[in-house]
Image 1 (tube, rainbow over the protein chains, first blue to last red):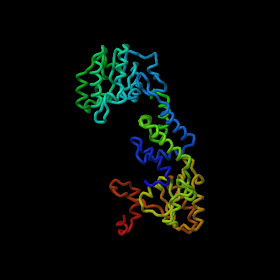
Image 2: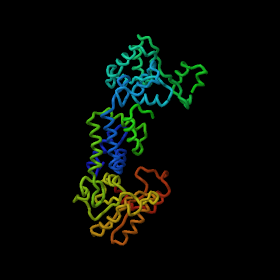
Image 3: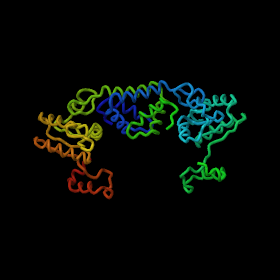
Image 4: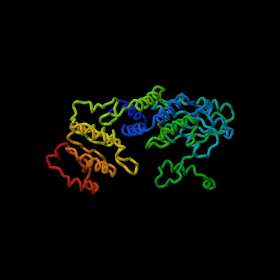
Length: 205
Length: 205
């Protein structure tokens, strides 16, 4: 692209370094911000710097938090015997949005992926074991993506955790609500048959 | 969305105020920036603030520039008798990318749009007339989108400029290279027949 201004080019290059943002989209976003008031642009950059400088990871569950321990871990309305193990903070948000889970979380910060050089020591696995050793937790739920990395991580975690006297479960795999059976993949459909649930459970939504 | 952190929510809200960026995309972008080094995030915000605080509009053509007069207007390799009238800086960039135009530009800063409350007085039309009065310009090319607003603007400009002894032209409308005739709309196809060009011109690419 031919930029009439180095300043414009600099800002567009920064935006196009973001994932999924190409040069044309970056230009559109930058020109949009250029049309805003100075105060709005300062608010935009302040929000970003404020986040970067002041965000913390909860000491207990490693979720993103504004203080040393996150609000979920501090809440007394939560079932402290139940811990849901997830990959990152987006998964916590997705599960919170369901309003169906009232236990605590443990954010691994990634999945085991030898291809990307991520091993168990790079994830918050030791701190999960320490939490379990405290004795309060009775069940661990793995809510981890059904990918090769996810399955590897679940396999590793299960091996590490089976020595403790706690229940270990994974979220159900099956046909999504609204999903049509004829278009489902064989693996999911097969699994949904072998892990079929009693009809009474079907009525619970 | 349930955010575990107000800081995160603040940054996501700022990003999702950008055009075409929803909450999920905003979250992805913010978490990407959160994973970068402090220096990278500061570089990102600095580029934006630097642009906002130091960008100028070229005194002559109103294009975005780093100094009082833009590089195109300053260049002595440009044909100063030819001025291409465009809506905004993106159009200048698009035309510059073709490498087919070597005249100057005039950026209107928008199009006449009564629906959006944009009248001729909001655009850089008077300054175009002043430029023409200086006597150097011999041809004006309208490179303006073929929309209702664009046509209104061309109509208005033509009425204002026809008293001057200069050539006025618009960019050609027709079937795009790679475009298939059977899928072209009637208006474009019809226009491409009435404004057909001699075969010799077809060979020029």
